[in-house]
Image (cartoon, rainbow, N blue to C red; front, top):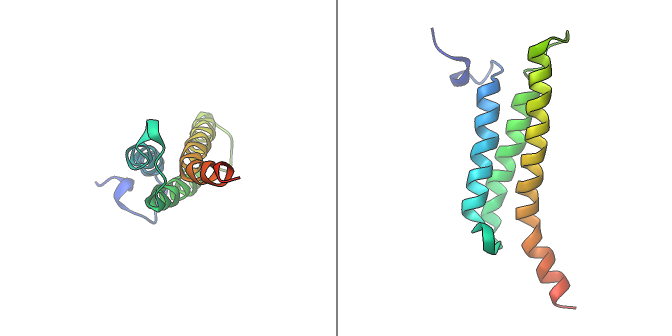
Length: 101
């Protein structure tokens, strides 16, 4: 019996969470976090975090139960992680625009 994490057609909460957490770690490494270096390589973690949110949303069940509540909680975590990733992607460019004026 194999896990659903290795089957892309089956929804997997673990796969979604791993994509999101992995993209946050990759974002912190690529952006050189305390210094917020501008790089377009941060588009890859941004894509991964969006895919992770979609994968987590696939796990929602039609009827509400505790699993459904846990998936909603994970979606909130994914949205906060996506905010961090997109902030790290866009912030150095906004600083460059405002510093030139």
